[in-house]
Image (cartoon, rainbow, N blue to C red; front, side, top):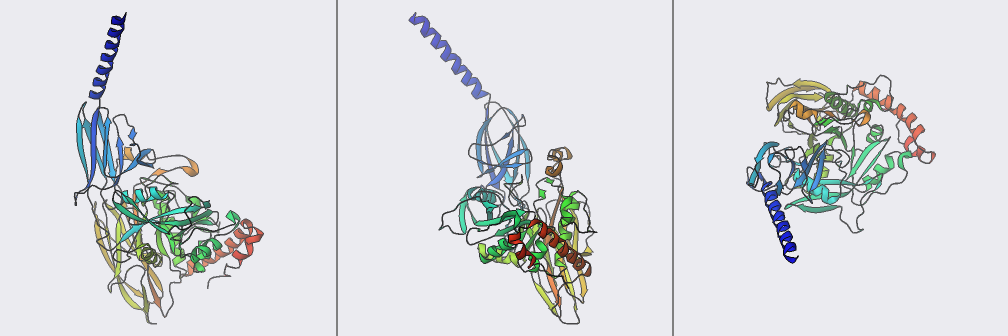
Length: 526
């Protein structure tokens, strides 16, 4: 009996050994390293690994980054795991300055395969004097720092207050915390806050202490913004179409209006035609629910504010954590000096020394060296000023334009597949003006079939595929006899908005808070 049992155990043990041997030879070991092609160093990045069955692989302990139905993750630059034999599809990205990579690797049973992904910079913005960040991040501090390092962002901000406190910090916490990921330190502003309701979404970035605000949606944004100002906050509105942005900007309480906002995601966009006229002013345009229509809505409503003589920097935010898109997909590049700290970065952004982009890079200057954020003061006779703009891209450019007081005054003639273009134009300026530049490109990285997979949802929550990518500078301002831009059409539209906003405030604000906002609304703009 003992002999029979021993024989059974031997057979079972042998079967297990054979199964283990077969199983080991039925898999392959894949070692991936992500390398900066110029330096040869391992770098963090965003990585997607898809096996032959179409399943995305997320290593244990890695931070996931969803983009539509794709499952990406943040890598420190090295990954090692077993896969079933077949073809593995790799995609790797590292922000806007590196060319994205898409590769297929065949792996065989029992193979140990080592593979390098070499990421190539097509531009180095640090060397050109720019640093980058965005203003709309719904993440925890460790998540924000890791994702920012993987996307090659220089600074991170996170909205630890959104309607109410979302992240608690010890009382002695510093407003900027320096978090490391994969050897990269990312200075992160941690006391930022967002008030988002029917009055408009506004982000207070760089606060020196946590947000304190009571009132909720029955109270306008005004006191939230004033409180943030006392904490040295950079005040950023989601778009020029926000209901309250004009009133707060006229009060001198807004620094930034997002032109590259969270309606644009990696490979897709949100149709939001209804945002074009939230105050229901008669005669205001509606924009087509196309990527170009949504971009025009963002720019036209921004221009209306500038045409009232307001100085407002262009802004960018992606809403990572609330939207399925990478951190810094929409980002600001700011001229903040050599090796700036967070304070210097935010101050330079508030002055408009920047451009915003989700793809191409754009550089505007005058013949005398003025750049975005600068003011040119002319005598009563005015003057001729030459404006020069250059657009540089990784994908084919579609347009490059110089904008003055909301109108196109010069545009480039582009050849097919052109990725670098310059134009120069002289304006005879006799009245106050603002001048900016914008460009677009077509992202051809994915095939039509691949791009179609980024279509999601329906109704308000739908996302549609998008190849449009664009950039926009903050303005250069020109005053004549001390007077800035005043465009009659925009001022008439703004006065209609003031009256419509009064009606909106009386409907939405509680009696406890109604007076504070009504008192802030000017009778009219002259």
